[in-house]
Length: 271
Image (cartoon, rainbow, N blue to C red; front, side, top):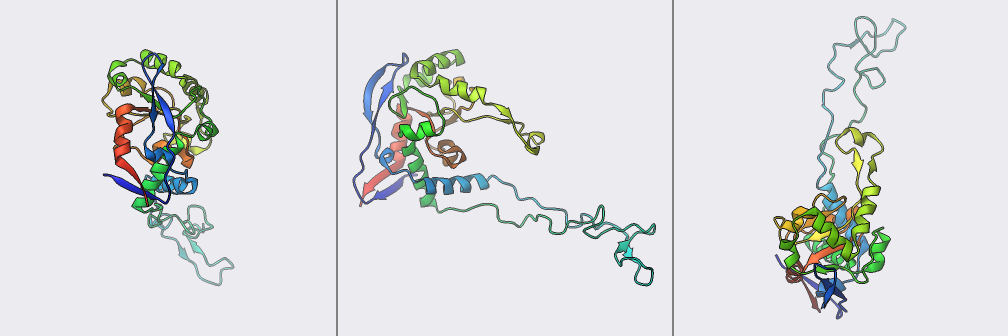
């Protein structure tokens, strides 16, 4: 699907370098017009919450929880509170009794998903793409790199040429982004709270995002186990990839073909 984004003025598109297997800049490219859009942090955060809350599963208490009891009130004249009681005199059923039902338990009817218009979502993704070319925003996210211009573009041959993690590590070191993966590895830590008992034991900071033409490329399989690394294609590139936590400025590496597909997917027109 092609998204057309209208702007009231002509945009200035930044340029970046395309690198080969040795980490040498072989060409200076003018980025697509979508990378010249203004970074709308408010819209990006709204789209992130919409995508994040869409993954949440509504949950609620059993309607009969705490109510499966034969307790009945003994009535008046006994010098006791008129709460439901078992034959042994113990209070039950009521909110303040042990094992009683909750006062206002969560219900599965609560609306968790924050909805967003389709065009707003497309503009937020386009704006998050533009943020990947802003060096100051990428550094503000905490990424560590030595490249002068962003995003980093690699030649298409590397998608098929690199098939081992060792080769990928050497490439990332030459591109000056391996330090960011080391940063993610050193910051892996145990989650605080009860989430550690529910399959979310570790917190792993995000590092490099690879946007390639396919998940089946050897390069995608070589880098998929690096700490904090995500892989996406132009077809499914979303706000969760580009702005984790709702904060734009993800350190991103594109292949040249993937960049061209993104350019054809997000068209920018001047009113």
